[in-house]
Image (cartoon, rainbow, N blue to C red; front, side, top):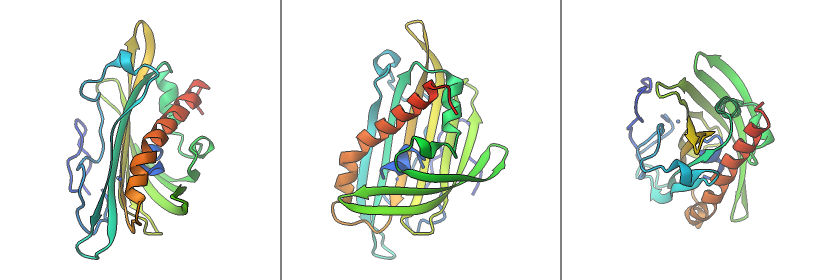
Length: 238
């Protein structure tokens, strides 16, 4: 796959709960067909219309969708999911960046991330193996992922992180992309950070009721994950 452009989100061919919140979890060679939903692979920069004062300590989920569709090749039921949230917090910029890039430490405070291991680092690219678990409508799912993260300090003074799915041995996903954007800002004389998170998982083998459950529970879960990151950063980061 070609490298990502540095100045604006990728627009590419056509993301569940934890996957878009923590690991907040990239272009996937696993996709067998294009699905519905947003074509964005990551979103950096301040979201249109963001009001820093209104967002101070009050994160907002601005997008949340899960669309059920059928893969025309296999006939398999799939879900194209995506979510976005943003908020402003009085926390040091450097501490927030450290938390986002503490890949092996995140299982301590990410409720559905059981383990994470950095397999390799090459410049700003980090390959991470994760074991993830969740429960939907009483059905428990646990599986392994290998993700590639990219980190970049941006011209506007912010920090951008994005991820893409490299492999999913259990076959639960056909794609997964996610990103975080962090920008130092000042609100009423206070040093704060603006944070924007985006996630796009593509789920295979969808069962009845799954899309509705995702729409119901994901907004609270992605806000909870962001707030956990902020609390960890306020401890001084890893």
